Structures are given as C-alpha cells and as structure tokens.
Length: 461
Image (cartoon, rainbow, N blue to C red; front, top):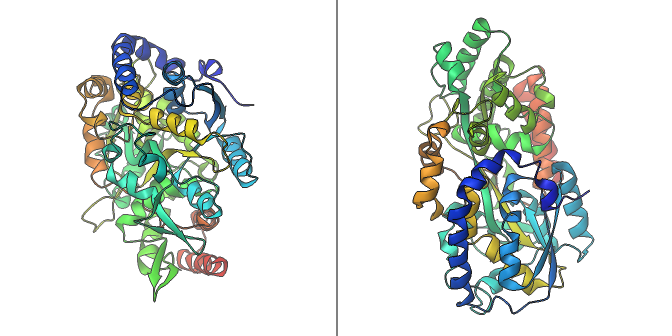
C-alpha cells in the first residue's frame, strides 16, 4: 500500500526534533520564496489540477512531502503522494510506465532505471519545459546542479541504446549519494586501527579487529544477487583499478569485466570480503549495513554517505561516533573513485497533466526547497552547489555529532562521477555481475568466473 505524508510520521520520527528547531527559519525563507516565484512566472496557470507523485519511501521523499502545503498554496495544484517500500516501488514503477498508465504524473527514479525506460519513450524529455520562460522561473538556475549530475541525466537514444554526453534532459536531480567509507571511530580508536585506504589495508585491519573482538563484523558491504550490491563499494573500488563495465572497441560496445585490471581487482576484493564481511554477506542489503554501523556490531562500511549522517544525529545510538573517509582505492592507484546514485524526478510520458507535473518538478528541485530539506536533516546530499555554500546548512551539518561529514563530502565530490557505462539493458548485465561476485566469494576461480560472466554478457548484447 502507498503511504501518504501522514503515514510517514513514524518513518521520520528521528528527524522531528531537527525539523522543529529549523521551522521558524524555514517558514520565513519559504515565504520569501513564494513571493519571489509568484512574480516570475504564473505559478497558478494550472490551478485546479490534481497530480500524483510516486516515490520510494525515503527521507528524501519526506523532505518534499513536508513542504507540499506550500506548493499547493503557491499553485492551486493538488498533489497526491504515493510512496511505496523499496522493492515494491521499483517493480510498480516499471509496470506503471511500461503499460503507459497515466495514473502517475511525476515519478522518482535513479539514473540506471531511467536508461531502461527512456528508449521506449516512457519518460517525457524535459528540455522544452526547462527552456520555456512561461513555464520555468528565471531563478531556477539549472546550472546550479552539480555538473556530474546534469551530465549523467542528459543523453540521446540512438538505435535503442543510450549515447551520453549530449542530447535531451530526462530527469532532474532531487538528491544523490556518493560512495564513502564510514566507520565507528570509537571502535577503531579503541583497537588502535588506522582508517584503511586500500583493500589490502582493509584486510589487515579486519584481521586485527577479529582478533581483538570476534563479536564485531569488521566491514559491512552489500552482497545480494542484485545490481545494487555492485553500485556502491564494488564499482567505486573497481574503477580505481581501471575496470570498466563496458568499453568501445572498433566502434562497438564490449564488456571489460574479463580484462586484466578486472581480474586484479576481483582477486583483491574477494579476498577482502572473505576476511572482512559478515557470514550473511550474500543476503546483506543496505538495511543490514546501516543497522550494523548504528548498533556498533559493525566497525566500518562502504556505502552511501548519507547513512552515516543519519545515524550521527543527536539522540541516535551512534550519535557522534561515525566518521567519514573516501572509498578504498587500488594499491598502486593515485586516486580513489566514488560512484554516484542520483535520486531524480521524472515525468511520465503518458501523463495527461504535464504542465502541472512540470511545475511540481521545478518547485521540488528548486534552491529553496532543496535547502529546506537539507536543513531539516532529511535531504542531506542536496544536488545543488548553492546548498553546499549556504551558511545555515553548513552550520548545521558541521555540528560536532556529524564529525567530518562536510569536509569529506567536499573531498569525495571532487572525484564523484557515474562509474557505469550508460546502456539500456544495464540491470540484466549488472545482476549477472552480482551473482558472479557471490560465486567468487564462495570459492569459484576468479579468472574463470569472470570469463564466464563476460561471455554471458556478450551473448545478451
């Protein structure tokens, strides 16, 4: 069943205290926002419309849901949120759009799912809305979004495939994640362990931790047989080894997962998982990773940085105990790499209320709404550069309980970029990679498994 903002109160209970502290400040800011916007474009040109916004149950959705009364007051447009649990949402999104149902007008998506939706014309290109001065406020400032995020959501479809770097805008960044190593500094300090920077250093730290306290899981990482277990730790570290999921050879797309660089990465990564991860690795998703860090049963994790922030919030069991660092890099690599996942708002091509839907997307991703969500402790990775130079947000995020969150974000964001090759059919190939990873962790020969994986991917291309 979908959840409405009222039903989300329990989901977001740990944000209430922060939201109350910020409410007076945000009320004034929002009022100024409404007046300024009202003088720019006609925000009431679709007054009386009613639209449906669908999204995953997530604090990023909470950030928008909490401000919906302001949008409805500004525009006269009624918004009905339909928010679903993670697995149910992605399945329902595919069904809704592939059947060309008009029941959802605005949808939340990630960059990778959008690659599979756009070639079938299931998403509405947004350029004509962005470039229409009657529909888009002059103060919207699209270029304020981080360039890596804008670039990742811009492509053209050619022969059913994705060609990145130019073309149409298919979605607008709403929030995002970069991949970091975050850790319980209380546990590492207690046992005199330095923050690892490479897989081999991590393996050594894990052995020391297990010797000192066998009850602690040294490292939390995702291991489920689904592409989401690849897009956090694995692809970020792999990229620093020079691994590419796909490469272009002789003008044709070819997998790079059986390359010498890939073999070297997987040998190191699999060895690290065997020494560091929980016995439940093959069944662990982000829920288990986050719970382990929050409870102190896990000492370190490589995943989306926002999880560390939310568990550092005052009053949480791990408050002030989680610190942040860049993800691991290849032993001989000069730089770490960090993949990005982009939570985005897109328009259903079958929507019959596209004008109203665009006003909602524009408002929900505007500078003020993004900033409000950040200061309320919900949308902590705003995709707008202006948020990260705003004193109110920086003062809040730099509180002692958040340790080095801001400084590490800025360091990592300089190198954060989409690590996957844009491609329709992404999910099928990356699911196969996740399954191969489990086989290698369970003892299968690395080189032979990667050869079989590459052959499987080639046969489906």
